[in-house]
Image (cartoon, rainbow, N blue to C red; front, side, top):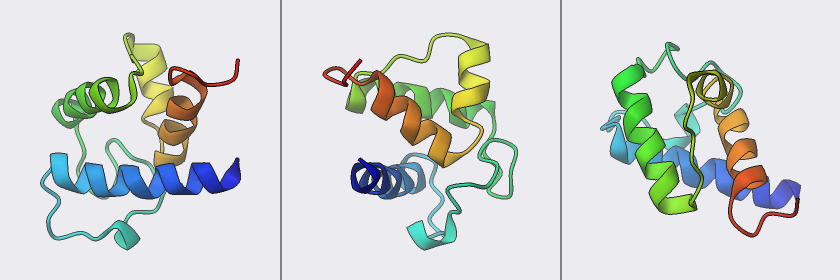
Length: 92
């Protein structure tokens, strides 16, 4: 389970760099436990919308309210955990 989580976190780092045009960063530059939105990488609400679309398209996970979004996008680890817990086929 932890290995799957690590793989998902690394995959998300690559996708975030791609969709948010953070071309000056490498996956190693992103701390999965650091504040994601409003943190050091300048991720804002427009970026969050792009991430929501990517997560729904790539993982089949909907994030459809602000309270859930605030928790989910607090850190990359929280985002990965949410995807893992809510993806189709996840053990309930």
